[in-house]
Amino acid sequence: MTPPPVATLQKPSPDDFRYVIGHFASGITVVSARHDGRPCGTTVSAVSSLSLEPPMLVVCMNRQSVTAQAITVSRSFAVNILSEDQVATAERFARKGGDKFADVPVSGDPGRPPLLDGALAILECRVVQEVSGGTHSVFLAEVDRARAREGSPLAYFRGRMGRLDDELAGRMPGQ
Image 1 (cartoon, one colour):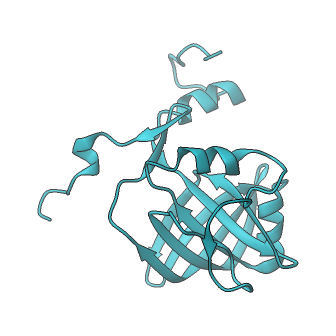
Image 2 (cartoon, helix red, strand yellow; image 1 turned 90 degrees about the vertical axis):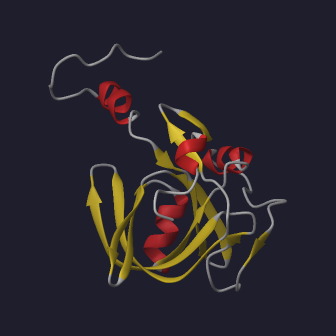
Image 3 (cartoon, helix red, strand yellow; image 1 turned 180 degrees about the vertical axis):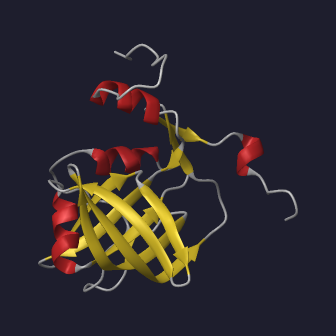
């Protein structure tokens, strides 16, 4: 059930906050890591660029997540930015438990985080700082390797996944 719109500025309840922040569109990623040689990963939309010099990201994940715990130990992870045709991948990695990597084509060195072969873009990162915020770990990470291909990203808006509007997904003015 969707809570009613928040009419005035006030301290939101958790349900009100989820409703309001849901108005902020974001991309969808699968953050992956390795722990004791085993791959782990989870769907994450709380990813943002932090710095160009050096290239850095901010990734926020629930501390109870197996993947967040693996990152805390391994100090490295990959951000796999999903393309608009990877809804099933996003849903698979959003579930708890099970072998999320079964029948998912991945590449990368065995000692590094697994990389999803169909991802629109991939950033391999090294944690430089971890801080706590509420129920989450906030990882500040330097990007060591990155690659991208042409295509459109999978977007998340108001609790739904889908493609960006054609106008937004197209070339930016001046390109």
